[in-house]
Length: 174
Image (cartoon, rainbow, N blue to C red; front, side):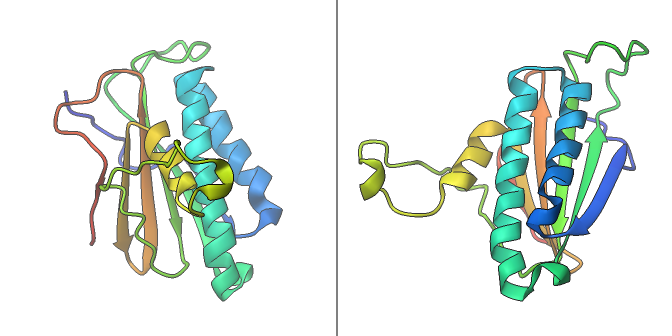
């Protein structure tokens, strides 16, 4: 099965990469996740993945160049395969893509490389870093990265249906 995404986002926001906008970004993605996927595991997982990316962008990109110099844009796309007129219930076969882009320095998270955590070590003995990106990979059906027009672009896909055989975590450069 292939997915036909809307040509334009169904909604979009943009703001400085700052903790001042943390709730704005999280509320935006949470409301769309619940609206399009319904309450439950899929919408929770998408929100978790978005929070991890927002956190990385605000902490790392914003601290390198100053939060007012880095903008985050969040776009929500919906598949065109199964639209229903009843908007009171999320379509159980819905698929959405959240695209997060930022104007910070180049950062490729290498989503195509599976991450593991050292769960046989105590928390104090585990290496620092990488847990957030591990959570992103574990929380969504597919994560992609690309450097496009001097911006980091992350795409997170959640599907309430099985993914096609060819889908997987991947990264591209443009």
